[in-house]
Length: 109
Image 1: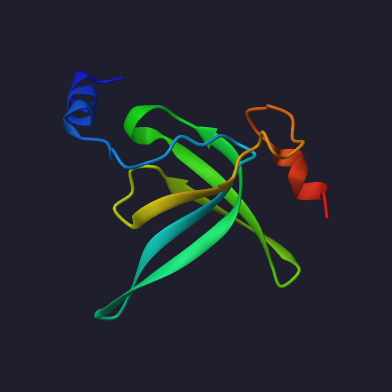
Image 2 (image 1 turned 30 degrees about the vertical axis):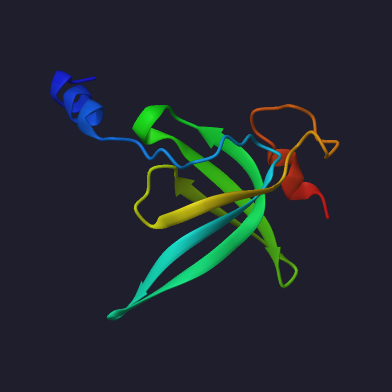
């Protein structure tokens, strides 16, 4: 990677208030939504099925069932639109294997 890109990434300060969570954890993400001039907060809750990347490029994928359809959304960890992340259940309580990517959950009902 180019040295200027590396220097720029090192200048960006990561968020400190992000809890440690893993794929398989049920989480609730509070997101800022801007509609016109108004700003509101919306909650997206579901199961984290994947985490990838390092440092400032880290992202995680959350899946939820909405009106019978599966909805997945990818969030950057250091996004300015994420207010807070709350862990509802950890994978230790669930009987989900400790895998890095839980894409097989897409086929489950």
